[in-house]
Image 1 (tube, one colour):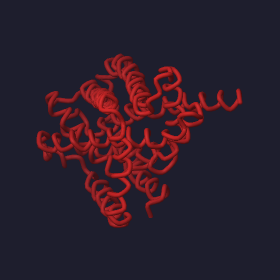
Image 2 (image 1 turned 90 degrees about the vertical axis):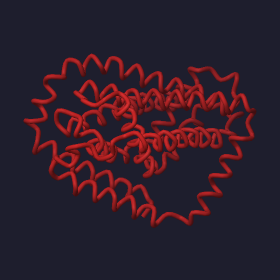
Image 3 (image 1 turned 180 degrees about the vertical axis):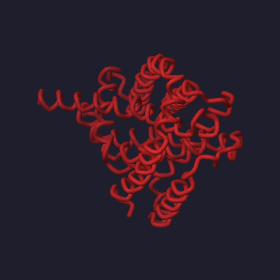
Image 4 (image 1 turned 45 degrees about the vertical axis):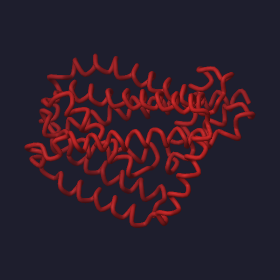
Length: 301
């Protein structure tokens, strides 16, 4: 039940709700979006470069955790793209390591898995920390949040799926032991390396949070900046509770975005547009580039 199929089923449920909702409210949504269309197109010229900067930060973090001083930023960048491509459809993104190792010099293969998992631990830790701050700061039940009809079934379905996922997990002790092993690798690194990797992870979090906030305001978000950031942090924390393939995450984030931000937008479904644009810039486009990188690598081999 923790298989890729279960996570894809959860995503399929969310995508089905999104499709039905978009179809039923398309005229009103198109009318709400038309007034912000030109501004949104210009805004994407900023969001996409931020996605590249996000990948640059991940590449620098990868170099630091590997301890590979002779690895160029170009090589690391291509390895990250390759890893994203492999992780796109694998459960818990376990294909990320294999994808990166495809282009990684053999001398660093021994520490590749530990470095990748240590980097993920840093990102998840930051997501949990800022999610707690978001929970404290975000008005969790903003006025009008349930005004959009048919939101209840989607939220109930996703909540039940969350409960089922955690109920069927392996014993908690097994997760703690695995986590301690990976933390052991992280803390075996020199303190300057840990500090540097943490700062690159923090930069990544700031970048993709800012991307989401920018998209919300470009679509007519009426709340304050701090409300937008608090909501985004809380949303990312909720989404991280269902680890899965990058493709399998599609849909869940968008439903949560309607819940958190729908009351602040000209039309609640505008939150779906923000989530989809974020997914396209941070996942879909890099994965397409990763396919090209892997294709060229296999061709040269």
